[in-house]
Length: 476
Ligand code: ARG
Ligand code: ZN
Image 1 (tube, protein in one colour):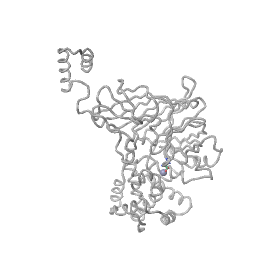
Image 2: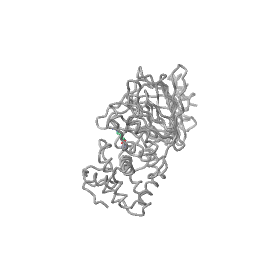
Image 3: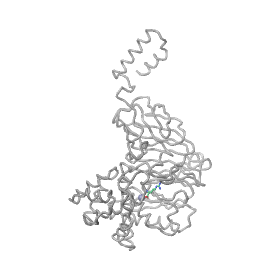
Image 4: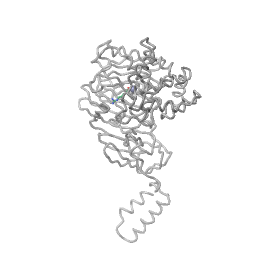
C-alpha cells in the first residue's frame, strides 16, 4: 500500500486527477490499511530520563541482546563491524535513537529492511521504513566503523575507547559503551551480549562473560568470542585488546579467566591479586548470597590513564596503579562485591550510586576482617570519626558520583543498618535484596522497603539521617 502511494506522488504532476488519487491514498493511510506509521506512532525520546545525564539512554524500547561482530586493527586504531540489536518497543515508534559517539555509520536496517539514519552529536537517529508497534520485538543492524575516541573527563576520570601501544581498552563509568557500539547507554536497560572480536594473530582480545575460544579468521587474523548471558548494564561491557598473560580455568564449575598485561612482572602483585579472585568471590557469596554470573575473572591493564578499577561484569578491569605498592586485596574485594551490588542488582538512576559503592566499600571491611586485618567495627569507627557530613551519600550530584560521601559514608550507612537491626537480620536483608533484585534495577527506596520488610522495623528515618543529614548521626 505504501509503495502505491509513493508511486503516485512520484508521477504526481499537478493534474487534478492525480491530486485526487493522492488524497484517496492519504485517507487510506489514516484508516490504517497501510503499514506506514499511523498518527499515534511517535519518536522515541533521545534520553532515558536520568536527571544527571539527560542524553544517556533513549526512550521507547528495551534492548534484549547486543551481538557485536567487531574487527580492530591496532596499527590503524581502526574499529569496524556490525552491531545487531534485538529490542522490544515500549511505545508505538516512528523512529528511535541509539547512543553512538564518533564513528561512522555505514548502513542501518530494521527488521531486515533498510532504514534511514542521521546523526546529532552522540545520538544516532534511526527511522525504520515501517513503524514499530508497542510490545513487538524488532532487530536493528548497524554497520559502522572508524577510529573510536576516548572520553576525557576531568571530574570523573578518563574512559571510553583508549588506544594503547599494542591494542586498546574500552572501559569507563558512567559512560563508555557508546564509544565502541550503538547502545541504549543507561544501566536501567540491561541486556545480554555476544562478542566476536577479530584482531591480528598473536594479540589477545578479552571481554565479559563466558569464553567461546579463539579461532582463525579468513585472513589469518584471530576471532575471539565471549558471551555474557546474564543481563548487563552497558557501562559494564568491556573490551581489552593487547599482550596479556591469560590464565584459563574453572571455579565452582564455571569458567574463570584472568589476564595480566605482559608489562607487569611475572608472579608479581597483579598476578597474585588475580589468583585470589575465586577465594574472595566465595567468601562474598557467604555474605551476599550465590555468585550471580556464569563466569569469573579479572584483567589487569598497564596504562597510566586508568587510575581506577571497574567492576566490568564477571571480569573486573584493574588499573596497574593498584598493584604498584604490592598486593592489594581490598580492590579485588571491592570489584568482586560489585558483581552483586551494581552488576547483578543495578541502579535505575545514577543518583543511587551509593547502592553500588557503599556496599562494595563495605565488602572491603568484611574481607579485611576475614583476613585478620582489623574488625568491621573498627573500620567503621575510624571512618566515622573523620567523615565530612556536609556532603550527602544519596543524590551526591554528578561531580560527586565517585566521591568519599558515596564510598565511605555509603559504607558507614550500611554498617549503621547492621547495628540497628543486628547481624542476623542484616545478612538476611542483603541476601533477600540480591535474590529478589537479581538481574534487575532498583532504587534506594526499594532497598529501604526490603530492609523494613525483612527486619520488621521502621528504617526510613535511619536511612534519611545516614544518607543525607549534614551532621554526624547518632550511632545506633
Ligand atoms: N566503580 C568504580 C569502582 O569503584 C569506579 C570507577 C571510577 N570511574 C572513574 N571514571 N574514575 O570500582
Ligand atoms: Zn566501586
